[in-house]
Length: 478
Image 1 (cartoon, helix red, strand yellow):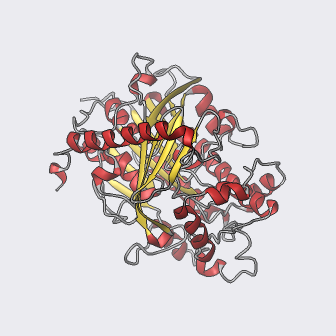
Image 2 (image 1 turned 90 degrees about the vertical axis):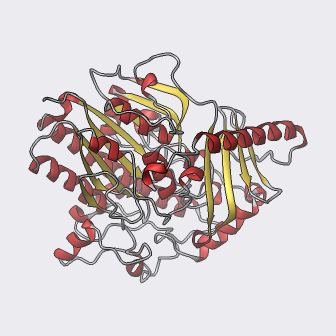
Image 3 (image 1 turned 45 degrees about the vertical axis):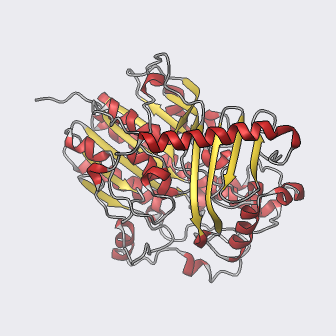
């Protein structure tokens, strides 16, 4: 019996900021293929992750629940199930190429086949694990560029994780993931319906573009948010301590600098953005191959990322904070002929809301216990659009990364953001209309104490409702 449900192509990058796509309003970017998706598709301008690091954010996305429900609070916490299992049981062929960040890495999570690429700068996740990219490098006699090699450079402690890719270009992890997906599409008999999840490892550090792309961005005038002593002095102690930690410990080959020069900041950002353009080129090749193989005749393509990167903004490195440059992610849905394109949706959503959206597109029932909600009404321009008045993010202590707080929680409305640290009398409160860059912390402002209490009340009520709503959520997986 023919199955006319759409093919779903789900592309996720790792650690890509919202301000990295030309068509979303950032002219210094070279992203012609992502621009095409924006111009012909539906882009969402206010999608927020549920956790400021890879595994808990992805676990929320692929389960439909907040981190405090999944109990997946940080990288390395075990999660091995997902709603992809529902897709596969319904008749979809489910393929993963690249990063998923399950724990263990090789957990099927509902996929029929996985071509795993997880370890850009390391082998370990409690044990040694060699992924598909490691094996390909080894088969070709190539030693993977990684921390142990970068540490031998004389400039290692000055470049904040930005290095030119030194192996053959086709072995760069993003090229390898893109080319593996292209190979699969060409080699495997066409199957309907297909769920293809492609997880690019970049632009997560090390910031390691091939030379051709790096040179193009080194010559650009790139925006850098001013970092002042006043802002650094006003940071919560947990973020001050994390700055010091990351200047001493080289996470992902990045040695953070407490007072980098404009030239050092520019180089890091140029390499990071160059990596985005490398991925954009692979996305163009994927679209061409999908079209040639007939998959785009009936398809929905979704592009997004799991969180952003401070890139020295706010004096911080990588993720683990609650600034919008971390928690707000690019999200585009492209399906010409199915959804009217060239639109931007400005309502707020949680990143995990993509999960029930995909299930609904696939004609698969959405569990009643899901905390995620479908975004399909916004795509079909139905009213109401099923948006959110508030979005939330949370993260537990992660001493190995220098995040020395028992629990950190964010609540954000369109106008205000509050960040709460368990057991501490400090926090963060930002007026997002007056201070969209989040540099003026109003937590202790006498004139904003009522606002702070209101946001804390929202946080309390959300947690109570969440625990009540999800009482039996995990019975089928335990």
